[in-house]
Image (tube, rainbow, N blue to C red; front, side, top):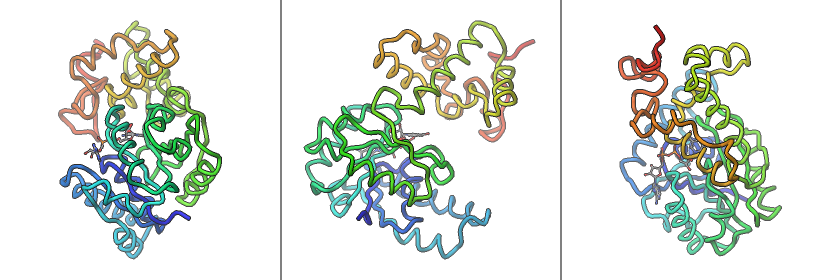
Length: 299
Ligand SMILES: NC(=O)c1ccc[n+]([C@@H]2O[C@H](COP(=O)([O-])OP(=O)(O)OC[C@H]3O[C@@H](n4cnc5c(N)ncnc54)[C@H](O)[C@@H]3O)[C@@H](O)[C@H]2O)c1
């Protein structure tokens, strides 16, 4: 039975994953190479609990007991020594993930499940550097983790059924809805989302419509909570480009070729919310309010 969980990486996703496990009674060790990032993650988790308390979703007592379930650690072997499950949510970089999984495989028990929260890296590839590829699986949480219901569970080529069943049940214990998919580029979430975003960028690039028109059609016509161009700004245009490249390389199909406008924007450092400008400009008013970027304003 899983009681102790180690989460590797205390960034945007790692703090959310630690939050939901701790909230549901698991003992969590949050591991990051950067001590300041661990400090920041614990503060973020506290603030996110306060937001849930204000909404009446949780209570002050639940916050206290959840925070008591979380420890932090900068040393990976120490952080994972008691873990029955490790969820890796470190930076999206193939070499880094291979290094982390190789090291994990050398220090954890044979019975420990190794999961990755990667958005696009092959689970089969990650598993191939471990001693027990049948114990490796994808556990793809969505952002923000405490709010989003889906966990996309990705079976690598060698993942054994017991491991999949354990992770499915665990996702349910966290109050999430698990969906099991197989390991092919982009899995399901990004294989479908990224071509839609790319097509929206192509529509802009070809002058079919402006930024606001494209996003309004998809919001009001398809009941999407956010238009695809704005969603791309929130995800990060560099992240969108790198996932499209994974799809393009992985399938060898030109339909996944990233739009030249996206490539240009990333090259120019226009990455969306995190750089202050993408299809919209966030520089003046902060990320809560936005205007169409000067470049795409129509006269
Ligand atoms: N941000 C999203 O919306 C989102 C959604 C779903 C999945 N993901 C995936 O989740 C993972 C993490 O993404 P993020 O947005 O939280 O990234 P992030 O940049 O916010 O955080 C990554 C963290 O990993 C830490 N790290 C780097 N090397 C490490 C190492 N060797 N050991 C331990 N920690 C290390 C960094 O210090 C940083 O704190 C990625 O694989 C990403 O593809 C992200």
